[in-house]
Image 1 (cartoon, helix red, strand yellow):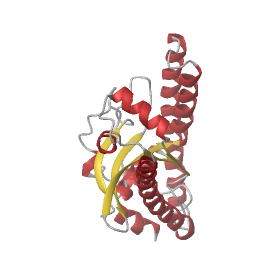
Image 2 (tube, helix red, strand yellow):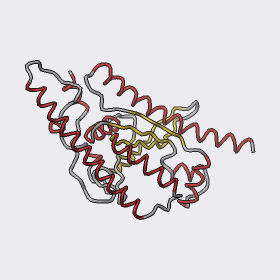
Image 3 (tube, helix red, strand yellow):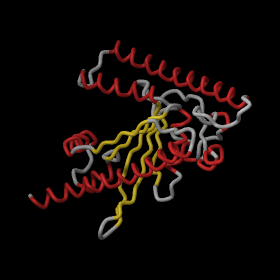
Image 4 (cartoon, helix red, strand yellow):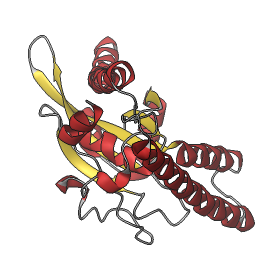
Length: 255
């Protein structure tokens, strides 16, 4: 029994270490932008580690092998990080900066922004493999990073609470209202980005030049990096291709 407890503790710790590694990278980016740039694409960062009870519940639902190795292979969201941004383009910008880091392996990208789920859910899901340097070996663990706007995050939080309240059996009329609210949240994101672009254009026409707190305009950003193309795991109608800033261009515009 003591050996089983030790193995389970070690199993969870490895995911915590991997999550800490990614959080450090995110905090470095966030502090760099906050202290040396006029604009930071990262608004908030939250994280969680699944409890053993929730892991076992997912093992039952997925029907995966009930061993540590089976769980390690099949369940990729034991360690989870959520990043919220102000604008849709910033969500892709942050994802690209993370995916560009050479010691992280990009395993999978699910683009629920361009292809929302049928219930209206929108977010970027990036599955990373993170090296964890232990005393006697290096182990790679999965960390899921969800990136979405403040409006998307508000909708997702409310939707989660509603499903919990109804134990998953949500009345159809409420589901319809949730889908409508998701459309309105997406429209709000678009409207706020347009306002940002207008403010940026006015600032660029002003006598005093310089990048303001509104950030770089999405029109200046090229297509997303290769890992965002052909992401067919998401379902639903395909929205407009969100523009993304590369890390090198971000450095150039912020100087």
